[in-house]
Length: 109
Image 1: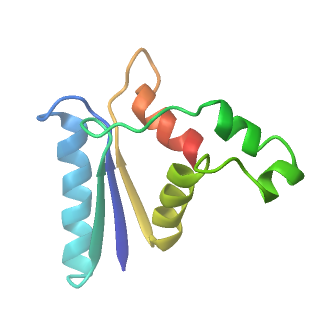
Image 2: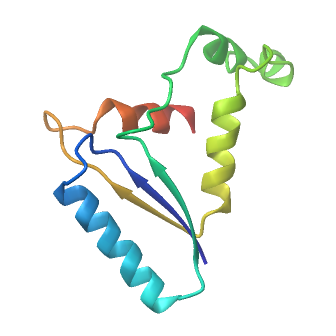
């Protein structure tokens, strides 16, 4: 089993971090040999999508030949999700929605 563990709280100590860590611990009890990829968006945020990214996705032709580097971050994140058997996301609620750093991650994948 491969676990992708994502946290998006800007606080080092938070309920969402505690909960996501507890879920990962339970998964490791079930599957002790599981590997984990950790992405902490609260402290290592991702860039928001930019014009080159949008241009690359605008049509099949531009997607076939995207601007150089425009999809590098997106492709790396997609590979992480594809490699995972389980995705655990720890997120607080900000103004009744998710933090922008998690939204940036979603937009990139």
